[in-house]
Image (cartoon, rainbow over all chains, first blue to last red; front, side):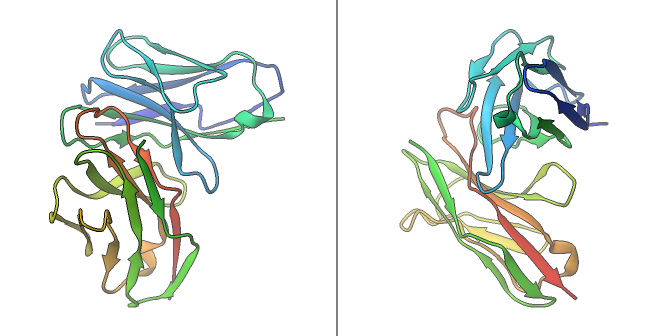
Length: 113
Length: 113
């Protein structure tokens, strides 16, 4: 099992450019998440998808859009990148239920200049 | 709202020293509590968890006890190794709204040989 995979691993964008971060999981999990990690702030939830066909905003959704393409895949799109979006982005998945554990991908390091 | 407060780092220790990382939380109801660990260059992985008051989670020599009376979930290890060098995150999941994890800011631990 690959678990949670993310592409790309690194990306540099200029202000105003767009890009999509890809995430896939092979654990048949219902729920998927996108987080950003910034120094001294822990992880903050951007968007999540509780199940296939549903998406909801997290703590910091502005400037992002998501698509739950199918049960395996959950993408994050930056339509017009800004320097404030420089961060490390993590995708995660979970089975749901209580209690539950989230499984994280290796992350994408994004720099916006 | 839900929040997690961790002791600030960085923490630097010698091998075989005792490690404590303090974590306190604010939540309504009875959340589940987690410690996640992030090794250099990797995504987060679950270290241990506790789902009700007085539960003790343990893994890899690490322990944490869910203390409802003090709203705390402190992480401890009796004898650290160089391989324990990582960033440690305390997190909570509201029991009846289980799609969102709230993370602390993270504590960087460096163990010297």
